[in-house]
Structures are given as structure tokens and as C-alpha cells.
Image 1 (cartoon, rainbow, N blue to C red):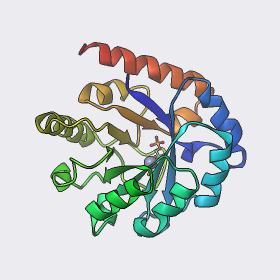
Image 2: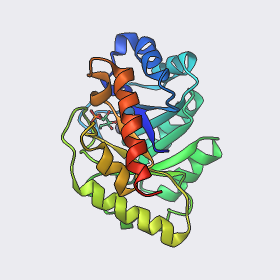
Image 3: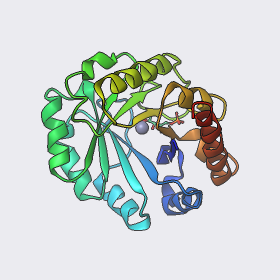
Length: 224
Ligand code: DX5
Ligand code: ZN
């Protein structure tokens, strides 16, 4: 079944352990952690010490999304701090193949992220080695932005490409996902769905995640 992955960007940073424990009880397997450097995106979030503290309070797979200019320098530090998987932006990597392999050689899964304006064809020559692909459905940098519908076309296109090539990598989506558009995203072919504000700004984050898991399940059953 498609995975719902809460993004802690919308959680309360002063009580992260509490907010993580709240959503953990829903049976989620992953947690999305947004790292921003104030250069690649116009916002700042957290570094390896915070990730290390998060690692101590949860066994969930830590899905670290690097929105930074120098992923080669910092990815190893996040892996050391407890990241299970690291996604890097195609737009930030001069030697994408090398960076993917470097992350994998340090024992983490490597994903590649595409901004809304970056075509999926730019990944043609690395699709065979990536562990997952993340399609941004907002311009990265902030929570609670509006979903860009063209992301659905990109997901469909990528899902076809994956099938044609006989590959298996999961397709992840990030940005502006809510209870209303989740079904469309799943039907387009998404395997992993990141949700920040729609989860943590709701009255009861656990109930919202459970509702999202139900929507994902019924959207998928249309195709089985
Ligand atoms: C945006 C981040 C997202 C963010 C999504 O740059 O990469 O992970 O947490 O937040 P929502 O779900 O509120 O758009
Ligand atoms: Zn993200």
C-alpha cells in the first residue's frame, strides 16, 4: 500500500518527540525531515545534531530531504546522524551519478528530487541506480503551499518510464497534499506521499494520518 509520510516541518520543533509519537501510533513506517540551507531554498531548518536527537526517539525510517547547495559535503553528516535515506535535488548536483553512489556507499538509500520546473527526462541516465524519485508538487522551501497539478502528469510519465525500463523504484511526492487531492496523487501512481501541514496543523494528527491511509487504500483498490 502507498505510504503516508508525515513531514515534521509542520510539527512543533520545541516538542518534536511528542508530535512524532502522536503520528507513530498510526502504523506509519517513515518520517520526512526537511533540511534547508537558506541558499538552495529561501528558508532554514535543521542540521545533523537535531536529526541525531530525532534518531534517539523513534525507530521510524528517517527520510531526509536535502534542500541544500552542497549535498556532497553534508549528506555523510546526516547519514552519520541517523538518516536511513537521503534525497538530493537534481538541480543542486553537478555530478549526480557520483553523489547517488556516494550516499549508497555510506549505507543509506539515495533518492533524487525534481523541482516543479525540472523535467523527468533529466533523470534518464540515473534511473537504473536510484533507490527512489521524489517529485516536488510545490517549489521547495515552505510548508502549506498550494499543490501544482502538473506534478500529476510527471508522476504518470515517470511511472510509465519505470515500467518500460523494468525498474522498481518507489515514486514519492512532496508538497500541498491534503485529504482532497490525495486520491488523485495515488491514482497517478505515487507510492510514497509526504504530508506536512495537512497532518500537523489538523486538530488530531493521528486521526488525519489514519484517514489518509484509508483514502490511499481505496484509491489503490480501483486498480487491483
Ligand atoms: C517543502 C517541503 C515539504 C513540506 C511539505 O519544501 O519539502 O516536505 O514539509 O509541507 P506541506 O505538506 O504543508 O506542503
Ligand atoms: Zn520535503
